Image 1 (spheres, rainbow, N blue to C red):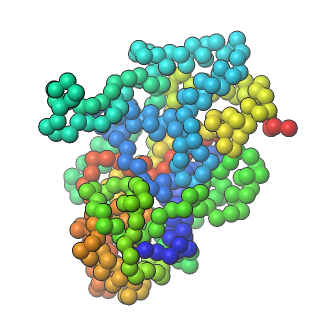
Image 2 (cartoon, rainbow, N blue to C red; image 1 turned 90 degrees about the vertical axis):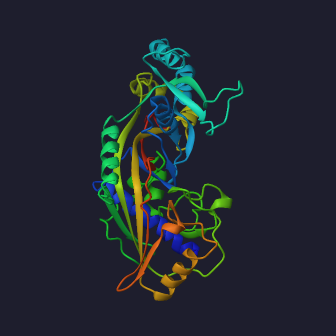
Image 3 (spheres, rainbow, N blue to C red; image 1 turned 180 degrees about the vertical axis):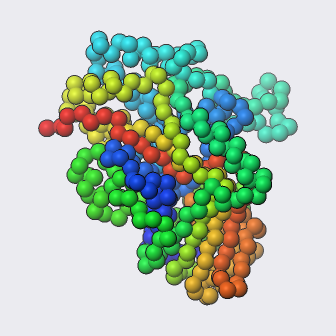
Length: 389
C-alpha cells in the first residue's frame, strides 16, 4: 500500500503544518526555525544511566542543523565554535579559548560532562577480556543542558501510560491530501515555522514556496515486510522502507495522531559557549570566513534551541472511500505485512485494529515504550554579522 508522490508530499506537508500549529500557535521568532523529522528518532534522554542520557543530549544538542525543513546535522557546534575562536585570534578571547579547552579536557571540569558511547553487549556475551559486560566507552565531551522539566514530564508520561491514559498528551488532526482541510489551527508563516536560511532573500523565497522536505520523503502510507519490534524509526534505510507492491491507496484520508506525552524542552550548550563573544567578534572575520561560518549553509549559522519530544503515539486513519479502506485492510492483514507506516511512525501490523461500521477506520498503537521520540527541533540563529559586500 503506497500513496502517489503528489499525495504523500501533501500528507507530509499536512503533518508538518499540523504539528507546528499545535506546538507553536503564536509562531516563532524571526531568528528561530523549526525542522521536523520526516523519519523519527528515538532518543534515550531518560535512560537510568545518566552518562548514557548525557550522550543522547550531546548527540542532539551538538548537531548544528542544516537549513532544511528536516532535521539534518550539518556540523558540530562545539567544533565550529572552537574554530571560530581560533580563526578570530583575538587576545580578548583568551578567556573563551580557555573555557573551550576545559570543555575539551579528558578530565572532569565545569565545562564538560561524562558520557558513555558505543553499544550494550548482548545478554550472555563476553567482552574481549572474557568477562561479561557492556561495550561502552566512557569519555568527556563539552557539556549541554536539557531542560530539567523533561525528567518530571517523562515520569508523568510513564504514569499516564501505566494507567491507560493514552492520548492525554495531545492530539493532532489533519487530512492527507491538499484538497482536505486541516482541523488544526492554520500554520504560522511558513518562513517562521520551517527552517530557512539567514539571508532575507532566501527567507522571502521560502515564504513564497511550498514547505516540503529538501529530500524526497518516503511514502506517507506504506506497508513493509519488515516487522516493527516496537514503534520505531520509519524508513531507516531503503531496504526497510521499501513498500510492498500492490494497489494504490488514494483519496482523502483523515488522520488523528495522539500522544501519551508531547512537549517542547530547552536544550542549550554549557558554560563553554559564549554567545556574546560571537556577536561581538563575528564582524572581524573576513568576508569569506563570515560566509563559511554564518552564511545560509555556514557551519556556525544556528544552534539547537528546543527539542520537540513525543511519547507513545497512536494513529487513527479514517477513510471516505470504502474501496480505499478495503485495500488498506487487505494489505495490512496480508501474510507479507510485517509493519505499517504512517508518516514518521512504524507499527507492528499485528496490532492494527480495523473497523467498518459507521466509520471506516484503522487504528495503530499505541505501543508500550520507554523511549521518547524526537519529532523535531527549533534552532536559533547564532549571529548576524555585517553582510558580505
